Every structure is written in structure tokens, then in C-alpha cells.
Image (cartoon, rainbow, N blue to C red; front, side, top):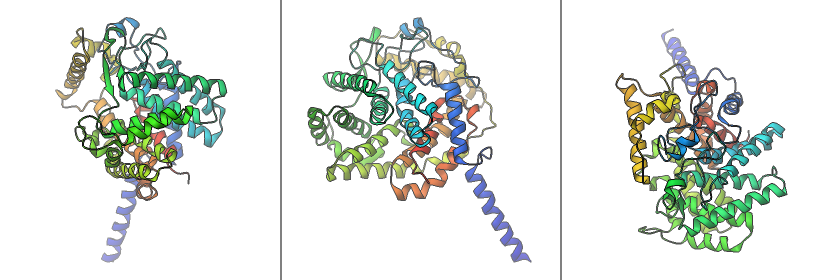
Length: 440
């Protein structure tokens, strides 16, 4: 009797454990969860101009910076912590997932969504007279934007449009226009020594570059060069790609192929565990390079980097369990004008702008931390953004063994969140992860 009771308790513990791992009992299947995320995304986060917002209230409302605020760099020159901070970044990473969704469904609404995201990316590259500049987002007048560009906005811009051009969605005219724009941006970046230029009062300055010695630098630059050859057929891009692969960046002990082979752990100056979202594009780039390149020595380096990065990210996915859907601390950035502009002052350089922006968020978080509350934005970042980004990094890797070992927790992570209640748009990584997984 005692043995039977022990066995029953053991079996019950397994059932409870499995239920906990799967979580998110509001969904019957992972496909249901993805559809919920998709509905939340398109009912709230995508503006009429086709550009994804960083966050909205639960009814879809958001305080969009005015043209005057963008021109004055309020709250800061990057637009950090506003709803229009990451249009190029988020649109570019999300677009391939929507393209894959359309490939599976052949639903005209999904096709229209992909076209809308692509048009948003094209708009971001068309509102400035600075060659190579990609805006972060657009103000209420349909053209004004914050002055700071960014490598984090520019690389996903290429990634998303590359996948769009390679799909069967755009017609010949749209495809030609996009390729022309991609070429113009790449040419300008090359002329600017692969640095991302700024606009407005910061013309002549740059924010971020692709020429550094980090994993993200190497993987992104090589992808851009190879992608340009793929869409243009211009041998000059292929020659540049091959040369860049064996070149050692300034102050680097390794060439770019060897850097890529080290995976995300190369970038030790970054807290990789809590910054998974900024490595997603690099992983996707290496995966695409393997598909495009017929040189086995280069592909071997890329596969090694993909494997190492996926293995690291697999250990981050389970952080989704810490997110409490019932917890309701305020998302204070909804009122960003009140909480950020109090610490505003004019900025003359990217360094000044960054210092001000970081201090602004620090002061906002202090409001909650003083009352021993973990800020809602921090919760969504640590317990949603990075676990879902990690899930995508593993799913997109194409490594059958790593995916098989982690598919259950990837799907559990996707099913965990009550998407209509999430303020930040980074739950788009749920769709990215799902549509990167091999179909069952």
C-alpha cells in the first residue's frame, strides 16, 4: 500500500511538472498561442505606416513623439524608451516570420501583412537625405524622426527586405525598387566605412558600425555583403564578401570567419544571457550564409558559430517560467513624456545622448524600486523578451539535435504568455520561433 502511494505521488509529480513546463493553460495548442500573439500584434503594435511600435497600452493606444520632440531629441536623440525606438530592428526580424506564415497558410491577409511590414522598412529608408541612414520610427507627420541611426536598426532592415525579395510576394516592380534601395544603402555604408550615419542636428556623426571585431559585427557584415550579391548578381559584392571573410578587423586576433565560429560568446563585453534579442539577427544571418555559400570551409565556420550560439541560448529559454501573467506593476513608459523629459537636456553628441538616455531609464525604474517593485518593463525584458529570443535562436539554427532537445521548452515558452496583456511588442519573437521550427 505504501509503495503504491509512493508510486502514485511520483506519477502525480511528473504530471504536475509537465503541466508547469507547458504552462499557459489558456491555450490548447502552440498554434493557438501563436495565433493569439499574431492577433495581439496586428491589433495593437503595427501602425498604419507599417512600422512596429515598441509598446502600446492594452487598448493599442500610444503616445507618439511629435515632430518637434523628435527634432529637439526629446527625450533623447535615439528615441530610446519611446514607442518609435526600434522600427527597423523589429520590422526586419519579424518580417521573415510573417513571410513563412503566408507560405504555410496562403492567406491573403498574411500576404498583406508581409507587404505592409516591407513598406514600413522602405519608408524608414526614405525619410532622410543622408545616404545610408535608416530611421528608427516615424512621427505623427509621416516623415520626421529621431536623428540617431544604429547598426541594430540597419542590419535587420537588410535581413527583412532580403527575405521579402526572395519570397514570391512582391511583384517585379516592387522587387526592383527594394533592391535599388538596398544597394544604395549598402553603397553608402561602404563609403562611410561601414558605420551607421545620423541625421538632423547629428549629421556627420555615427552610431554603431559593422566593422568591429565582435561576433555581431562579423556575422552581420558578411551577411549584408553576401545578401547584396544574391539580390543584385553584382560580382563586386561577392568579391567583397570573400575578402571580408578572411580579413582581420582592426585590433582583432582573428579573421571574420574565425570570429563567426566562436559564436555569441565572443562578445564577452555584453551580458549575453540578458541580451539575447540583439543576437537573434546574427544567428539568422549565419543560418542564411550556410544556405547561400557553397564553400565548405566557410560554411563549417558558420555552422560552428550557429551551434555554439544555439547551445548557449537553449539555457536561457526556461526563464519564461518566471513571468507571472497575473502580476500587474504599472508600465510607466506609457506616460514617457512625464517620466523621461524631466531629465532632458540638449545633446551635442551621441555620447551625451546615450548618457542622458540611460539616466532617464534609471530614474524611471527608481520609482518602482523604491517601493520594492520590479518594474514591468524589466519583467517583460528579462522574462519574455530574452526567453523568446533565445527560443528563436535555437529554432532558427536548423540543428536537428539541438532543436529536438529543446522543442518542448520552446513550445512551452510560446504557450506561457497572455499576449493581449503584454505591453511591449517583443513578443513577436514567439512567432519568429514558431515559424522557424521545422513543421511537424
